[in-house]
Image (cartoon, rainbow over all chains, first blue to last red; front, side, top):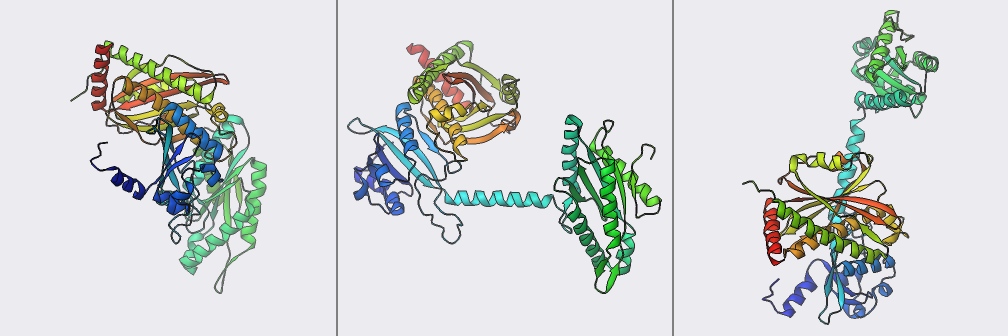
Length: 316
Length: 205
């Protein structure tokens, strides 16, 4: 740096730059404290220069700071801290009381070792207010998480969609095929659903889907995965479940749906469902096969007269 | 214009310059941590940009699937990006030594990775830059990922520069071995600077 400016101009710039600047000695005695530091800490340079930093700010991470200052002096190398790992060095208020939703100023810091005019080793610490960055980062993260969750869901019923269910099934399939265990897949299709739509209208049809979903949701375990597979077709991944357990569950679902008609306005809409079940065994090569088998069993259930559960058999 | 790779003699000098730089780094680390630190002689090689991920993957082959990566940009007469790659838990033993043992915050381990990277990259490059009288500055390091397979840390980005300097260093601490791979990507202009610096260094020798 070549300074055509005099010391007083440089001093003015250091004081007024929109960055916190402080200089400490190896024993953490404050040598310089600029206006940014004064304004945010409410401690004037007059009060703090010549005093020990940790005594004036007992909340600072003392042991860490001592090591940091020692290490930059020893290595004669810059060091950095980022808000992502260490949200702040000095607990300052932020300047976004209305839009912030945060409790403090986020800071990035740089530690710069240098030699003072009398040969003493000093460390300059610069402190950048990165609250805006931290807030927008958090907003992006939140939006990302929301979108991801949304991308897993069926908008009408709120249960999982086909894509998510298949990825979960794939994972579970990998697990049982590697480590062993039981896994079944149940397909469920509402009987004569087109007739519901044609007779009572699509809104009534939607209501049926929502209520039936609710009833099935109440019955599945947390480790199962219920998804709307297509229009009126649902798929349920049943973990640690073989055919006999799957059959008991499928028949309970079938009975609950049959027993409780859906009320829509003055209409009472009777609903039944057909279900197809298949279980993983060692011959099954991929989760697709499992889905395909359940679908075939479901087809047979429809053919045999609906409102029933059919298990997959190899000759289907 | 394609930058020519360094010739054999230039590479020998580079190896020497890096040895000295890393030796200083080891001495500083030992002083800082107050433990015995033994550094292996760094293995230095150049890889072509497209080959960079494959080469690094080969280097760490058979050492597990869980790596931590930290990147740091450097600029001025030498400019580029440095990657430091650590094995699983490779750094944990350093935590106590670095004065983090009383902190249980989420960011503590990542901060340690950043600090160690900053020290290693700084020591190595500053050592080189000082010896060949080139100016060098650093930006803050950032974590690329923790606990990930190597190709997720070093996936083939669209890189502007295709010369890549691979430096492999192993550290032995009293507490146990700890290995780290440093990868430096440099701009073509920097490689020219490096070459001219090395030539001058040779002449003054």
